[in-house]
Image 1: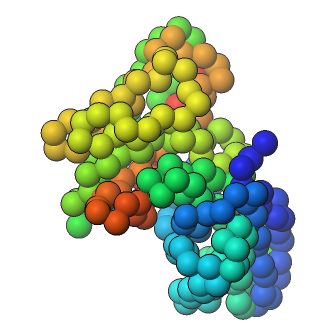
Image 2 (image 1 turned 120 degrees about the vertical axis):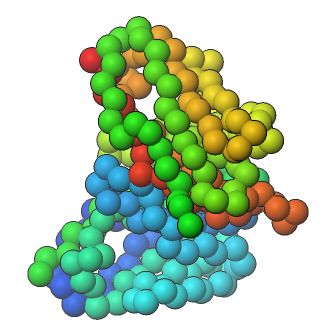
Image 3 (image 1 turned 30 degrees about the vertical axis):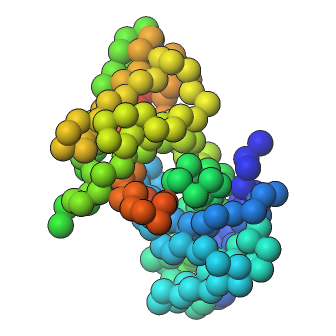
Length: 111
Length: 115
């Protein structure tokens, strides 16, 4: 089983709609990373959260890390077809780049 | 500023063969990590190289080995290939400073198919 659980596994939304992807860990996280991946390609870094309660935004994407540092959410506002892809959360469990990833959430945005 | 590069892009091998994958880190980075990503799964950590030594290792057999060169580039070697080794192999680089971990930047990957 994955150390990080992502939900949902897949998501289909109409263009312009908002959506949220969740990432949950049973252990406290030293760092929580969000990446985006196009099918069969490398991972594109989106954001990194380290402090409990931290929230970061980039364009229409906002990521939050809860106070206990065990859950993170990624929110996309007014989704566009360019947002389509696989979103992966990764955790640095030991503060030394020992990364573990969730299975990913496949996002489809219908024009 | 070149990002992380990997070669080759695609590779087809048969069972029992050996393969070598290559990675050049992002300019200024000194640490290289390798991941295996099976279809529909998240990347699985194989190992990490820093200062030309393996610093950490995930749950992969000894058939998986690596090397880091003085210019920080790295190779991943897999011996006695199995069908289950078919996957996308990703290389990531980072700069490990005094503060500890830093963001990893990924290459485009090498797609390995074992027949």
